[in-house]
Length: 367
Image (cartoon, rainbow, N blue to C red; front, top):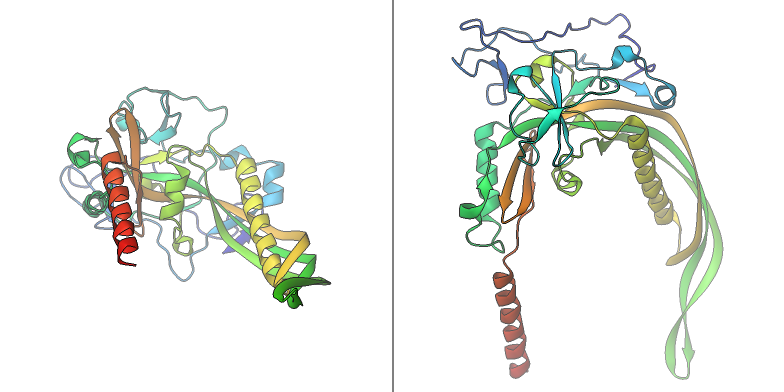
């Protein structure tokens, strides 16, 4: 990936000019990105738009930016969506969504609430510079959801009937990715087990010795989700997203789709990423300590060549209500990986516990 200064223009490279909409050549309606056909298609007459969108090839450049320089100040020229959008905030779940103007006034894509109000930003959002287009179409997403429902055998039997299911929504979520080269030196006390006989018993002892070393590790595209509209633990289950196939941002890919504005800014995302990297570096150093056990591990890590980018990734989201609680089911819009939340049937769980106790009882009787 190309390394550029903090939001420098592409030096000497052709740049795409964003357009506000993509008209259908047959009926004049707005064409939307169609995951099944991998093209801009009119949702009314089915005509494919001849518009040429960014593609990934051997010469594709996905720009990454210097993190330290970016944190010092980002120019307004690199903020905004480069296309006409309207931003609303859900008063129920507080998700901030970016819609095509014609779609405003619908329900929140994240919780299903109709309590949407205009959201005025202090400054426009940072521009995403690359994205992953939808590869899983709506029909496939529905199949994945039905299959997921079928696997929830500890859920109430009437889940499918009583869950007030809304339609499956496709939307783009904001992510930050971070790179860093890390050199870490470590010191520790390495423990080696040995055994002694004490009063006729074999007793384990530990012989401690000083140990030190160093490791080098490169973090590439460490993901930090900038969304608060989808449960983070669900997103972790459908990750990773194949960032090696990112395409330079083109408004055509988000035509007709909802885009969530990032709500975790660059500063907080960078802090989150550093914490995750620190934890992984510490674990790598711990794995490098010789012996059977260890104590007093000290790690001194130096981070260089820190870079980031702001990207959009596609997901399919189903929000449904069971009883008085809202649940979410998420599918990765590229790989189809699924994860979801559901209610539990305490009757089924109780019967399962009784069955387990009965089996243990029978096992005890036969032995």
